[in-house]
Image 1 (spheres, helix red, strand yellow):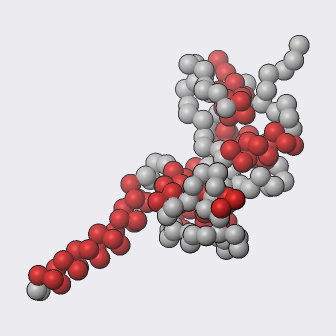
Image 2: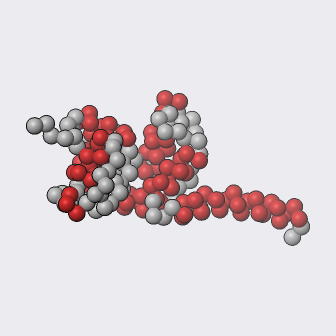
Image 3: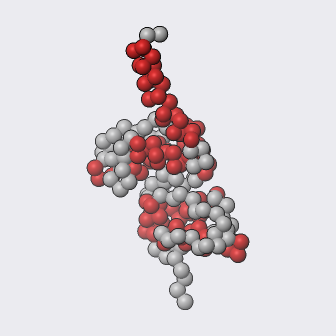
Length: 173
């Protein structure tokens, strides 16, 4: 093989292998790999008014397997079906649209799927104290928490607040 063909072959190998490598590297956090793929394609968190919104124009179509809206200015990146399925297994609420029927139930499901248990706050795995409350308030978990909170989209939290304004907030005496 001549020198210029070796260079061309090397460039093609690197450019084609990089996206696949990036998706396989983050196997423990497949949803983060999808976020990173969308960000690498130029999508920006909170930029849906310009057609480059991370969630509306990239993550939602990837997770649902649906076409992008007409407002989208960038094409979605190639994301393997295996990565989407792994993400769904880790976080069933990931990519859920705010207009989904039961956003608060999706948050409860995400916390339960992450290992949090209703009434288990003494062991640092309490569904409400260590997962739902911090997610809904946007605050860090207590030092007693033994599990990390799952990734839940800000849009899902906002949709839950809209449907149930007191959900996950401290009870008033």
